[in-house]
Amino acid sequence: MNTAARILFISSLALIVSCGTKPKGNDLADKKAQLASLKKQQAGLNDQVTKLEADIAKIDPAAQNDQKTKLVTVSTLQPGTFTHYIDLQGKIEALNISYITPRGNGGQVKALFIKKGDNVTKGQLILQLDDAVTRQMVVTAKTGIESIKTQLAFAQDLYNRQNNLWKQGIGTEVQLITDKNNVETLNNQLKSAQEQLKINEQQLGFTSVYSDVSGVADDVNIRVGELFMGSGQIRIVNTSNLKATAMVPENYSNKVSVGSHVSISLPDINRTIDASITVASKLIDPNSRSFYVEARIPSDKDFRPNQLAVIRLRDYVADHAITVPLNTMQTDEKGKYVMVAVNENGKLIARKRQVVIGELYGDNLEIKSGLNSGDTVITDGFQGLYEGQLLTTK
Image (cartoon, rainbow, N blue to C red; front, side, top):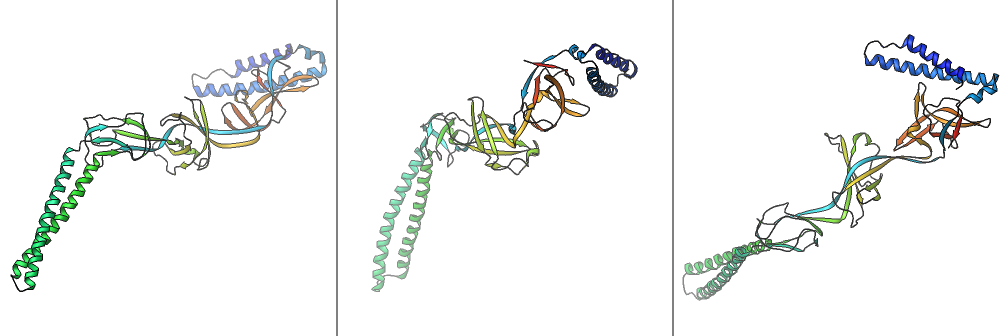
Protein backbone atom coordinates (compact mmCIF):
# COMPACT_ATOMS: atom_id res chain seq x y z
CA MET A 1 0.00 0.00 0.00
CA ASN A 2 1.50 3.38 -0.97
CA THR A 3 1.75 6.30 1.41
CA ALA A 4 -1.24 8.24 0.09
CA ALA A 5 -3.51 5.24 0.23
CA ARG A 6 -2.33 4.28 3.70
CA ILE A 7 -3.02 7.80 4.99
CA LEU A 8 -6.47 7.75 3.40
CA PHE A 9 -7.24 4.39 4.98
CA ILE A 10 -6.04 5.34 8.47
CA SER A 11 -7.83 8.70 8.36
CA SER A 12 -11.08 7.17 7.23
CA LEU A 13 -10.90 4.45 9.85
CA ALA A 14 -10.10 6.97 12.60
CA LEU A 15 -13.04 9.11 11.49
CA ILE A 16 -15.37 6.13 11.68
CA VAL A 17 -14.09 5.10 15.09
CA SER A 18 -14.36 8.62 16.51
CA CYS A 19 -17.75 9.43 15.02
CA GLY A 20 -19.73 6.27 14.88
CA THR A 21 -18.41 3.57 17.16
CA LYS A 22 -18.58 4.97 20.63
CA PRO A 23 -19.75 2.11 22.85
CA LYS A 24 -23.26 2.40 24.17
CA GLY A 25 -22.64 1.19 27.66
CA ASN A 26 -21.39 -2.25 28.46
CA ASP A 27 -24.06 -4.18 26.60
CA LEU A 28 -22.41 -7.16 24.86
CA ALA A 29 -24.91 -7.26 22.00
CA ASP A 30 -24.25 -3.58 21.18
CA LYS A 31 -20.51 -4.14 21.13
CA LYS A 32 -20.86 -7.16 18.85
CA ALA A 33 -23.04 -5.15 16.50
CA GLN A 34 -20.51 -2.29 16.50
CA LEU A 35 -17.67 -4.74 15.78
CA ALA A 36 -19.57 -6.28 12.88
CA SER A 37 -20.27 -2.80 11.52
CA LEU A 38 -16.60 -1.85 11.76
CA LYS A 39 -15.50 -5.02 9.99
CA LYS A 40 -17.97 -4.36 7.20
CA GLN A 41 -16.76 -0.77 6.83
CA GLN A 42 -13.14 -1.96 6.96
CA ALA A 43 -13.82 -4.40 4.13
CA GLY A 44 -15.39 -1.57 2.15
CA LEU A 45 -12.36 0.63 2.78
CA ASN A 46 -10.05 -2.16 1.65
CA ASP A 47 -11.95 -2.35 -1.62
CA GLN A 48 -11.69 1.43 -2.03
CA VAL A 49 -7.94 1.32 -1.32
CA THR A 50 -7.50 -1.41 -3.91
CA LYS A 51 -9.45 0.54 -6.50
CA LEU A 52 -7.50 3.72 -5.78
CA GLU A 53 -4.20 1.84 -6.05
CA ALA A 54 -5.28 0.44 -9.38
CA ASP A 55 -6.32 3.90 -10.62
CA ILE A 56 -3.06 5.44 -9.40
CA ALA A 57 -1.07 2.65 -11.05
CA LYS A 58 -2.73 3.42 -14.39
CA ILE A 59 -1.93 7.13 -14.06
CA ASP A 60 1.53 6.68 -12.46
CA PRO A 61 3.00 3.18 -13.10
CA ALA A 62 6.05 4.07 -11.03
CA ALA A 63 3.84 4.29 -7.95
CA GLN A 64 3.49 0.51 -7.96
CA ASN A 65 7.14 0.22 -7.00
CA ASP A 66 6.24 1.78 -3.63
CA GLN A 67 4.11 -1.25 -2.72
CA LYS A 68 5.72 -3.67 -0.31
CA THR A 69 5.68 -7.32 -1.29
CA LYS A 70 4.73 -9.99 1.24
CA LEU A 71 6.44 -13.33 1.61
CA VAL A 72 3.98 -16.22 1.39
CA THR A 73 3.85 -19.97 0.93
CA VAL A 74 1.63 -21.33 -1.84
CA SER A 75 0.25 -24.69 -2.93
CA THR A 76 -1.10 -25.66 -6.33
CA LEU A 77 -4.47 -27.39 -6.14
CA GLN A 78 -4.89 -30.86 -7.60
CA PRO A 79 -8.17 -32.84 -7.59
CA GLY A 80 -8.29 -36.02 -5.54
CA THR A 81 -10.58 -38.29 -3.56
CA PHE A 82 -12.08 -36.69 -0.47
CA THR A 83 -13.44 -39.03 2.19
CA HIS A 84 -15.41 -38.03 5.25
CA TYR A 85 -15.50 -40.29 8.31
CA ILE A 86 -17.45 -40.37 11.55
CA ASP A 87 -14.85 -40.78 14.30
CA LEU A 88 -16.03 -42.85 17.27
CA GLN A 89 -14.57 -44.37 20.40
CA GLY A 90 -15.12 -48.11 20.47
CA LYS A 91 -13.65 -51.34 21.77
CA ILE A 92 -12.88 -54.92 20.81
CA GLU A 93 -15.19 -57.61 22.17
CA ALA A 94 -15.29 -61.39 21.94
CA LEU A 95 -18.26 -62.96 20.21
CA ASN A 96 -18.20 -65.99 22.50
CA ILE A 97 -17.68 -65.52 26.24
CA SER A 98 -18.65 -68.43 28.48
CA TYR A 99 -19.11 -68.28 32.24
CA ILE A 100 -18.57 -71.74 33.67
CA THR A 101 -21.21 -72.67 36.24
CA PRO A 102 -22.11 -75.85 38.11
CA ARG A 103 -24.91 -77.88 36.56
CA GLY A 104 -26.23 -78.90 39.94
CA ASN A 105 -26.03 -77.21 43.29
CA GLY A 106 -22.26 -76.85 43.14
CA GLY A 107 -19.97 -77.94 45.90
CA GLN A 108 -16.50 -77.83 47.35
CA VAL A 109 -13.63 -77.79 44.83
CA LYS A 110 -11.53 -80.94 45.17
CA ALA A 111 -9.19 -80.35 42.20
CA LEU A 112 -8.60 -77.46 39.76
CA PHE A 113 -7.06 -78.26 36.37
CA ILE A 114 -6.62 -74.80 34.80
CA LYS A 115 -5.24 -71.40 35.73
CA LYS A 116 -5.79 -67.91 34.38
CA GLY A 117 -4.37 -67.51 30.88
CA ASP A 118 -4.49 -71.21 29.95
CA ASN A 119 -5.84 -72.29 26.58
CA VAL A 120 -8.95 -74.40 27.01
CA THR A 121 -10.67 -76.70 24.52
CA LYS A 122 -14.37 -77.52 24.40
CA GLY A 123 -15.14 -80.53 26.61
CA GLN A 124 -11.96 -80.16 28.68
CA LEU A 125 -12.22 -81.00 32.39
CA ILE A 126 -11.98 -77.71 34.31
CA LEU A 127 -12.40 -78.74 37.94
CA GLN A 128 -13.53 -81.58 40.12
CA LEU A 129 -15.97 -81.11 42.97
CA ASP A 130 -16.07 -83.22 46.12
CA ASP A 131 -18.06 -86.33 45.12
CA ALA A 132 -17.72 -88.56 48.18
CA VAL A 133 -21.35 -88.27 49.27
CA THR A 134 -22.76 -88.55 45.75
CA ARG A 135 -20.54 -91.55 44.96
CA GLN A 136 -21.76 -93.27 48.14
CA MET A 137 -25.34 -92.61 47.07
CA VAL A 138 -24.62 -94.33 43.76
CA VAL A 139 -23.12 -97.34 45.53
CA THR A 140 -26.09 -97.52 47.89
CA ALA A 141 -28.54 -97.27 45.00
CA LYS A 142 -26.78 -100.09 43.11
CA THR A 143 -26.79 -102.27 46.23
CA GLY A 144 -30.48 -101.60 46.73
CA ILE A 145 -31.21 -102.57 43.14
CA GLU A 146 -29.38 -105.86 43.50
CA SER A 147 -31.34 -106.59 46.69
CA ILE A 148 -34.64 -105.85 44.96
CA LYS A 149 -33.64 -108.02 42.02
CA THR A 150 -32.95 -110.93 44.39
CA GLN A 151 -36.29 -110.45 46.14
CA LEU A 152 -38.01 -110.15 42.79
CA ALA A 153 -36.49 -113.38 41.53
CA PHE A 154 -37.64 -115.20 44.69
CA ALA A 155 -41.14 -113.69 44.48
CA GLN A 156 -41.39 -114.56 40.79
CA ASP A 157 -40.42 -118.16 41.51
CA LEU A 158 -43.06 -118.42 44.24
CA TYR A 159 -45.67 -116.98 41.96
CA ASN A 160 -44.78 -119.40 39.16
CA ARG A 161 -45.00 -122.35 41.54
CA GLN A 162 -48.31 -121.18 42.98
CA ASN A 163 -49.67 -120.59 39.51
CA ASN A 164 -48.78 -124.16 38.46
CA LEU A 165 -50.47 -125.55 41.57
CA TRP A 166 -53.51 -123.41 40.91
CA LYS A 167 -53.79 -124.87 37.43
CA GLN A 168 -53.79 -128.36 39.03
CA GLY A 169 -56.54 -127.32 41.41
CA ILE A 170 -54.24 -127.09 44.37
CA GLY A 171 -54.05 -124.04 46.62
CA THR A 172 -56.21 -120.98 47.03
CA GLU A 173 -56.89 -118.02 44.75
CA VAL A 174 -55.98 -115.63 47.56
CA GLN A 175 -52.48 -117.09 47.77
CA LEU A 176 -52.07 -116.82 43.99
CA ILE A 177 -53.19 -113.17 43.97
CA THR A 178 -50.90 -112.36 46.91
CA ASP A 179 -47.86 -113.84 45.16
CA LYS A 180 -48.73 -111.96 41.96
CA ASN A 181 -49.02 -108.64 43.85
CA ASN A 182 -45.66 -109.25 45.51
CA VAL A 183 -44.05 -109.62 42.06
CA GLU A 184 -45.68 -106.43 40.76
CA THR A 185 -44.68 -104.49 43.89
CA LEU A 186 -41.06 -105.58 43.59
CA ASN A 187 -41.07 -104.73 39.86
CA ASN A 188 -42.24 -101.22 40.68
CA GLN A 189 -39.61 -100.91 43.41
CA LEU A 190 -36.95 -102.05 40.94
CA LYS A 191 -38.00 -99.42 38.37
CA SER A 192 -38.02 -96.72 41.04
CA ALA A 193 -34.59 -97.77 42.31
CA GLN A 194 -33.20 -97.76 38.77
CA GLU A 195 -34.54 -94.23 38.17
CA GLN A 196 -32.98 -93.09 41.46
CA LEU A 197 -29.67 -94.62 40.36
CA LYS A 198 -29.83 -92.60 37.13
CA ILE A 199 -30.40 -89.42 39.15
CA ASN A 200 -27.53 -90.26 41.49
CA GLU A 201 -25.21 -91.03 38.58
CA GLN A 202 -26.22 -87.74 36.91
CA GLN A 203 -25.46 -85.88 40.13
CA LEU A 204 -22.12 -87.66 40.26
CA GLY A 205 -21.44 -86.43 36.74
CA PHE A 206 -22.19 -82.89 37.88
CA THR A 207 -19.17 -83.02 40.17
CA SER A 208 -16.93 -82.98 37.06
CA VAL A 209 -17.10 -79.53 35.48
CA TYR A 210 -16.22 -79.21 31.77
CA SER A 211 -15.74 -76.23 29.44
CA ASP A 212 -18.52 -75.77 26.90
CA VAL A 213 -16.37 -73.61 24.56
CA SER A 214 -12.80 -73.38 23.34
CA GLY A 215 -10.81 -70.28 24.25
CA VAL A 216 -8.63 -68.74 26.93
CA ALA A 217 -9.28 -68.86 30.67
CA ASP A 218 -9.65 -65.12 31.12
CA ASP A 219 -10.65 -65.33 34.77
CA VAL A 220 -10.26 -68.19 37.28
CA ASN A 221 -11.53 -66.82 40.57
CA ILE A 222 -11.72 -70.09 42.54
CA ARG A 223 -9.32 -72.20 44.57
CA VAL A 224 -9.21 -75.75 45.88
CA GLY A 225 -11.30 -76.00 49.04
CA GLU A 226 -13.63 -73.14 48.16
CA LEU A 227 -17.27 -73.53 47.24
CA PHE A 228 -18.09 -73.43 43.53
CA MET A 229 -21.66 -72.19 43.53
CA GLY A 230 -22.49 -69.80 40.69
CA SER A 231 -21.44 -67.63 37.75
CA GLY A 232 -18.55 -65.19 37.61
CA GLN A 233 -15.88 -67.48 39.06
CA ILE A 234 -14.54 -68.89 35.79
CA ARG A 235 -14.72 -67.07 32.43
CA ILE A 236 -13.61 -68.57 29.11
CA VAL A 237 -13.12 -66.16 26.19
CA ASN A 238 -12.96 -67.33 22.59
CA THR A 239 -10.41 -64.91 21.09
CA SER A 240 -10.68 -66.41 17.61
CA ASN A 241 -14.04 -64.67 17.07
CA LEU A 242 -13.78 -60.94 17.74
CA LYS A 243 -15.77 -57.85 16.87
CA ALA A 244 -15.36 -54.09 17.12
CA THR A 245 -18.30 -52.27 18.69
CA ALA A 246 -19.31 -48.62 19.06
CA MET A 247 -22.29 -46.36 19.70
CA VAL A 248 -23.17 -44.05 16.78
CA PRO A 249 -24.96 -40.72 17.37
CA GLU A 250 -28.60 -40.71 16.29
CA ASN A 251 -28.11 -38.01 13.63
CA TYR A 252 -26.01 -40.44 11.56
CA SER A 253 -28.71 -43.13 11.46
CA ASN A 254 -29.45 -42.51 7.77
CA LYS A 255 -25.77 -42.72 6.83
CA VAL A 256 -24.72 -45.94 8.60
CA SER A 257 -26.09 -49.37 7.78
CA VAL A 258 -25.03 -53.00 7.42
CA GLY A 259 -22.23 -53.13 4.83
CA SER A 260 -20.92 -49.62 5.50
CA HIS A 261 -17.12 -49.39 5.32
CA VAL A 262 -15.30 -48.95 8.62
CA SER A 263 -11.66 -48.37 9.51
CA ILE A 264 -10.65 -49.71 12.93
CA SER A 265 -7.49 -48.31 14.52
CA LEU A 266 -5.88 -49.84 17.60
CA PRO A 267 -3.58 -47.07 18.85
CA ASP A 268 -1.93 -49.16 21.57
CA ILE A 269 -0.44 -51.58 19.04
CA ASN A 270 -0.43 -49.21 16.02
CA ARG A 271 -2.65 -51.43 13.87
CA THR A 272 -5.45 -50.52 11.46
CA ILE A 273 -8.07 -52.91 10.07
CA ASP A 274 -10.54 -52.37 7.24
CA ALA A 275 -13.90 -54.01 7.80
CA SER A 276 -17.63 -53.67 7.16
CA ILE A 277 -20.55 -53.13 9.51
CA THR A 278 -22.18 -56.50 10.24
CA VAL A 279 -24.76 -55.33 12.80
CA ALA A 280 -26.51 -51.95 12.95
CA SER A 281 -29.14 -51.73 15.65
CA LYS A 282 -32.55 -50.27 14.83
CA LEU A 283 -33.03 -49.22 18.43
CA ILE A 284 -31.99 -45.75 19.63
CA ASP A 285 -30.79 -45.66 23.22
CA PRO A 286 -33.03 -43.10 24.98
CA ASN A 287 -30.25 -41.94 27.31
CA SER A 288 -27.30 -41.52 24.94
CA ARG A 289 -29.39 -40.92 21.77
CA SER A 290 -27.17 -43.33 19.89
CA PHE A 291 -27.40 -46.79 18.33
CA TYR A 292 -25.17 -49.86 18.48
CA VAL A 293 -22.99 -51.10 15.59
CA GLU A 294 -20.47 -53.90 15.32
CA ALA A 295 -17.99 -55.19 12.74
CA ARG A 296 -16.37 -58.63 12.67
CA ILE A 297 -12.58 -58.58 12.66
CA PRO A 298 -10.05 -61.36 12.00
CA SER A 299 -8.36 -63.16 14.87
CA ASP A 300 -4.86 -62.06 15.81
CA LYS A 301 -2.61 -62.79 18.76
CA ASP A 302 -2.31 -59.03 19.41
CA PHE A 303 -6.08 -58.41 19.50
CA ARG A 304 -7.68 -58.62 22.93
CA PRO A 305 -11.24 -58.21 24.20
CA ASN A 306 -11.93 -54.77 25.73
CA GLN A 307 -9.02 -53.26 23.79
CA LEU A 308 -9.72 -49.60 22.98
CA ALA A 309 -10.33 -48.83 19.30
CA VAL A 310 -10.81 -45.70 17.20
CA ILE A 311 -13.59 -46.54 14.77
CA ARG A 312 -13.98 -44.45 11.63
CA LEU A 313 -17.22 -44.96 9.72
CA ARG A 314 -17.05 -43.77 6.11
CA ASP A 315 -20.20 -41.80 5.30
CA TYR A 316 -19.18 -39.60 2.35
CA VAL A 317 -16.81 -39.94 -0.64
CA ALA A 318 -16.20 -37.43 -3.43
CA ASP A 319 -13.97 -38.20 -6.41
CA HIS A 320 -11.99 -35.44 -8.17
CA ALA A 321 -12.63 -33.12 -5.24
CA ILE A 322 -10.80 -29.85 -4.58
CA THR A 323 -9.72 -29.40 -0.96
CA VAL A 324 -7.83 -26.72 0.98
CA PRO A 325 -6.40 -26.61 4.50
CA LEU A 326 -9.02 -25.49 6.99
CA ASN A 327 -6.89 -22.63 8.35
CA THR A 328 -6.76 -20.92 4.95
CA MET A 329 -10.51 -20.30 5.03
CA GLN A 330 -11.56 -16.72 5.88
CA THR A 331 -14.88 -14.91 6.13
CA ASP A 332 -16.10 -11.48 5.09
CA GLU A 333 -19.49 -9.88 4.56
CA LYS A 334 -19.88 -11.78 1.29
CA GLY A 335 -19.19 -15.18 2.82
CA LYS A 336 -16.29 -17.64 2.75
CA TYR A 337 -13.13 -16.95 0.76
CA VAL A 338 -9.48 -17.94 0.38
CA MET A 339 -6.52 -15.94 -0.87
CA VAL A 340 -4.88 -17.13 -4.06
CA ALA A 341 -1.72 -16.03 -5.85
CA VAL A 342 -2.28 -14.96 -9.47
CA ASN A 343 0.40 -14.11 -12.02
CA GLU A 344 -0.55 -10.82 -13.65
CA ASN A 345 1.82 -9.09 -16.08
CA GLY A 346 4.76 -11.00 -14.69
CA LYS A 347 3.94 -10.13 -11.07
CA LEU A 348 2.47 -12.36 -8.36
CA ILE A 349 -0.66 -10.69 -7.02
CA ALA A 350 -2.94 -11.67 -4.10
CA ARG A 351 -6.57 -12.18 -5.08
CA LYS A 352 -9.64 -13.03 -3.06
CA ARG A 353 -11.73 -16.02 -4.20
CA GLN A 354 -15.24 -16.47 -2.84
CA VAL A 355 -15.96 -20.18 -2.37
CA VAL A 356 -18.76 -22.58 -1.47
CA ILE A 357 -17.60 -25.18 1.04
CA GLY A 358 -18.62 -28.80 1.47
CA GLU A 359 -17.63 -31.38 4.06
CA LEU A 360 -14.79 -31.07 6.56
CA TYR A 361 -12.65 -33.93 7.83
CA GLY A 362 -9.52 -33.37 9.85
CA ASP A 363 -7.69 -30.40 8.33
CA ASN A 364 -9.12 -30.87 4.84
CA LEU A 365 -12.06 -28.76 3.71
CA GLU A 366 -13.94 -29.68 0.56
CA ILE A 367 -14.54 -26.81 -1.91
CA LYS A 368 -17.72 -27.20 -3.94
CA SER A 369 -17.14 -24.17 -6.17
CA GLY A 370 -14.91 -21.11 -6.47
CA LEU A 371 -11.57 -22.88 -6.98
CA ASN A 372 -10.28 -25.02 -9.82
CA SER A 373 -7.49 -27.48 -10.43
CA GLY A 374 -4.24 -25.60 -10.94
CA ASP A 375 -5.17 -22.59 -8.76
CA THR A 376 -2.44 -21.49 -6.38
CA VAL A 377 -3.73 -21.14 -2.82
CA ILE A 378 -1.75 -19.14 -0.27
CA THR A 379 -1.27 -21.55 2.66
CA ASP A 380 1.05 -19.46 4.84
CA GLY A 381 1.27 -15.70 5.19
CA PHE A 382 -2.32 -15.05 4.08
CA GLN A 383 -3.12 -13.24 7.31
CA GLY A 384 -3.48 -9.52 6.67
CA LEU A 385 -3.27 -9.84 2.88
CA TYR A 386 -5.40 -7.49 0.82
CA GLU A 387 -6.68 -7.71 -2.71
CA GLY A 388 -3.96 -6.79 -5.20
CA GLN A 389 -0.98 -6.97 -2.82
CA LEU A 390 2.30 -7.97 -4.41
CA LEU A 391 3.67 -11.32 -3.31
CA THR A 392 6.90 -13.21 -3.23
CA THR A 393 7.12 -16.94 -2.48
CA LYS A 394 9.51 -18.95 -0.38
